[in-house]
Image (cartoon, rainbow, N blue to C red; front, side, top):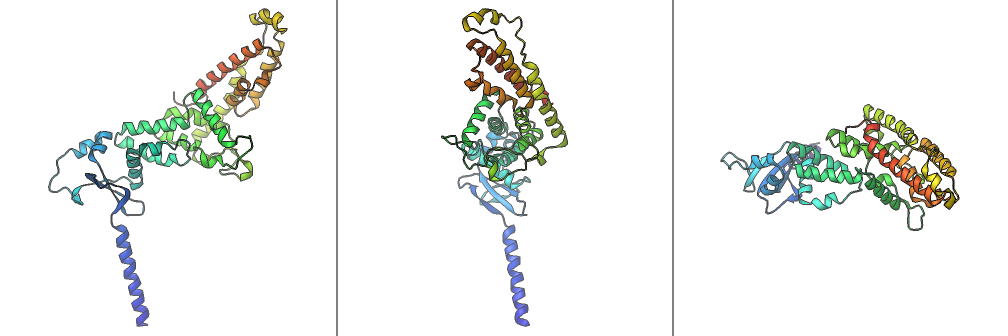
Length: 347
């Protein structure tokens, strides 16, 4: 019995020592810089403390809040760490780490343009960049988000082409790629846009969500490759209403913009003799496109196919084909410009 009691006492003492050790400040592996001239500590979620050693000039250049804080002369009561001034922050250590990584490893973080794992890092930076008035860092993050959720139709088309290449190999055969693991999450983008007031990324994120089926769970089985899903739980009830309204309005507005009637069209009178065409096929083609817009979940892509796949307009003469393409380009541009209105977003 005494032996067992001694063992229990020894284990208890060991546990106390390990607990005390875990509560000691821990220097950050890569952000405790040997030539840094300011030390900052931040609490961790586990109850510990992380110590960062960085440069006052770096902090001051990025934040007027830090600049005012650090320009005060060092007094006797100021705490020191390794002989350097110590400043205790109340922000979470993981958030501080994200900000410092963006300061010191700027190109590496922002190069992950289509990574699904960028937004959590981005959220930390957006939160603290607002608090500490780090306008340049915020702008860098916003620009990154805008490459994921473009602000212009031409940028959107380029991104869609890039994603299509990711999903298909050179022989146009499907490759084992789970796009949900490789591409940014749209519902999280909307949450970030709402929380940190980034209206520029909202139209593209909402449009992308409008193309998806809410019945498909996140991370679908591998037999459904290239099918995109979303984390629908991240959306608020108000966002879901905006999504439903926009989805309903998209096809209706697109169809209303496509006018199949060619009566009185001067182009019919000027080219029918040369091209052996009276414009009737053009009217039928526009009606067909209107019908497809009403039933598709991706109006922009449907209209784009008629602009890029020549065979779809092959039954018509060159003049009629050119007229329809001009009309479709205009409709796509108008639809893109109307996305904020259709999804009831801030302008």
